Image (cartoon, rainbow, N blue to C red; front, side, top):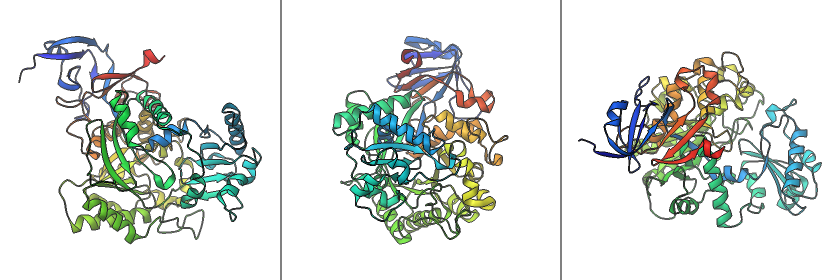
Length: 523
């Protein structure tokens, strides 16, 4: 069919469609929020358009999709003390004091901090109730580890929660709920919630993110609010597409995919175990640095299977959080059971994290219609330095084994798990390509055989991500008929040293053919 008119022709670029590796075009046309043609400059210029845009040799990629994040929780964390860069307890105390002063908090106000990682501290010890009491013993204080599965509170917070048997102030998993439910909402009304969410989504646009999969983690106090996204959409202020997921069943009988191309209901999430850093991930053998401890299962095998079955029979996509090999085994058992009992067409189970693998688990996973959602930042930002202590050399060989999973034909998607890891997808791409920290250590990369190519890494944020939400026909690649969600970046990440990928800057972000971020305008 001949195309007679476009809204915009883009030419003189390097347009990676992400349909095949090492292939690119130089131009494309957009009409009514969709791509209608991709080709050479001459081919595209032959199409009559209302506007012609010279890309000036810049790189164009499909928009990035973050497949697992706690979006509203991330937005709220922008209001807390940022503890991610703290390398000792003294710095935590100082950040808390700064936040208390900046926000003019009194003794009746909760003082909150987020993102610390005790593995960065010289003694690798968690902060204690005594440490936080030195900031204030009259004001309730709670700080949350970056994994969101463990908190430290001061004596005032323990008193308010009625907890009398926690001398160190460290609360974990379900015990956290006793404290978290006492904290007044930072955004007490709908409008304040909506504005802080909008602020976070705009920030994500600056990193080239055009799609997100927000996850409600009621289990860890991370809520999501469908109405906020709906209102932003109605106000034409939703700068990303949203595939919204919950850890509780919908209140009416809707199925995965309910909604429109901007806002859809996604999957039902189950929490199998905890986190590796806190030794709460469920392992089949004890932790190497804590003999006798094997982690925590949040539910019995039977309960997880029943939750999975209930969601599966309601035609809800199922996603299970599982980090330790025992947690993964129980998750795979549940999904395998449901699929065997009722083998529906086009099932797309999601295993979230899938960190500590075993050969038998990999064999079972590759026989199932299952996607593994990984968090690249673990191999550069946090877990890289302490995982060998937790697991030992033998178990580490099949942990964070991204390339092994890929070679076994298992589809991988990528995510930040924000606020756990940085939302910048180019940091994520750098992480799986180099497997080094921000200082480019260790030399040669951590477990270098598990490094992925740049193409494979970008696929995880684009076409694989679109597949994971049943949207591969409308996004994830730059092809005629697909939504015009694309980004313009400042370097060709496929043809530069891998260490430079982390420095990539997004120049423009487009959703539905509309520019939602322009670096020049934001400067």
